Image 1 (cartoon, one colour):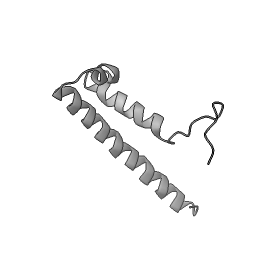
Image 2: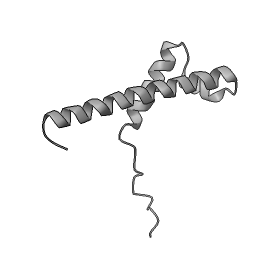
Image 3: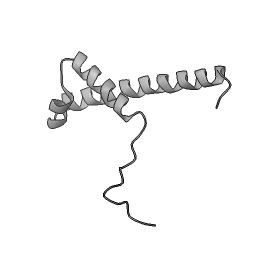
Image 4: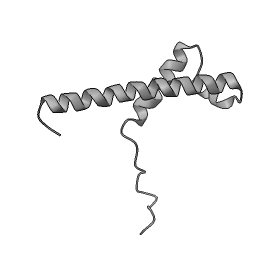
Length: 77
């Protein structure tokens, strides 16, 4: 096994950017910023970040389910 070279980009999760955007949108709707909450260490900040993460997970599951449905409709896998 070889080490990854400095010029080799790291692999990214395909939906990571969408997940971050969903979390940011949820927190913005609640009147907070992601960066500010990450800098805090209190129960309210953790609760908001947890709720935003759960919201993003639910939306990503919905996106994936719709994707599978569309692929099934078109007969591709």
